[in-house]
Image (cartoon, rainbow, N blue to C red; front, top):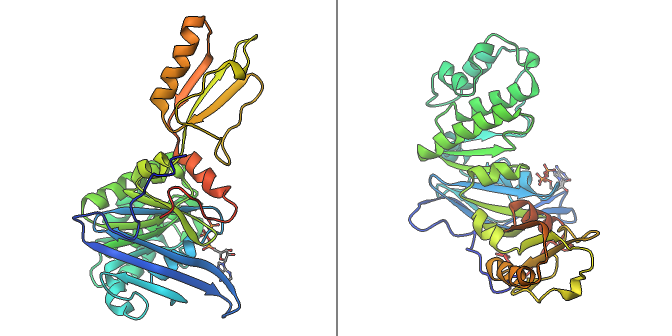
Length: 333
Ligand SMILES: Nc1ncnc2c1ncn2[C@@H]1O[C@H](COP(=O)(O)OP(=O)(O)OP(=O)(O)O)[C@@H](O)[C@H]1O
């Protein structure tokens, strides 16, 4: 792999953007000093109008991190600044400027959607009109429905409406589209994109790689309490080798093939060769493909089902998920 590849430090906001969220060496331990450390020295920053996505395996520490940034609990180590302030100690100053969507909204089940929104608006210093907020998440037609009668996806959209009701400058979204059907998910993405255009800053967690690829300016992949790799999607993907696969015709053996430029061993979690289908990895896709075709064409060898592609975010994620100790050599911030 690209051992020399350097990935931008996630602790630095992109040049030219004001830093809205700064997290430095964050730690969270549950159950006292002998307890389990779920967040183990996490650092990242989010610039104004930027969307930063936290991805990771189950139990990686995404929600534990997000809750600290939201100011719901004090960290056991490290510092967090939101608009330059401590979100836990200076909650009164930070909270009115933030919108929070937890994994479970927890709004009273017996209230209607409109009652919930009006009640929530009453707690906010500068709430948007309730109808407008419901309209944005396509719930206006459900205004008179009790929360307990909403589908799981509709509840998620209600949670989002409540998170944006107070005209926040920064939004914290914990798995905002889990349980949504594809159309609702795309509508949510559109809404989030519109908020970003308005200069709102977003920190979200997600299990949907497509969501991160669609929305994130930068992302971090966490594993066992640490950020293993971070950067733009292109940065993260570039730290992993490209793949060339094809069917080797009968009578030809892998030993007949030329050594490909930039050849790499299969990364952990990557698709292996199977049967007569060979899968080769390289960090120099174009020269490797040129060498392969330069060998095959003059010999009249047909490489059936030839497929050449750069690494995907999914491969980067799987490589992180398969990294045993949660630390990798390349792409490590
Ligand atoms: N209140 C708690 N007490 C003890 N351990 C906890 C508590 N909350 C979370 N944990 C543990 O901390 C680790 C990180 O959990 P967290 O919910 O932050 O992960 P996550 O990345 O959000 O996971 P998922 O993708 O499954 O939602 C897990 O091992 C979890 O069991």
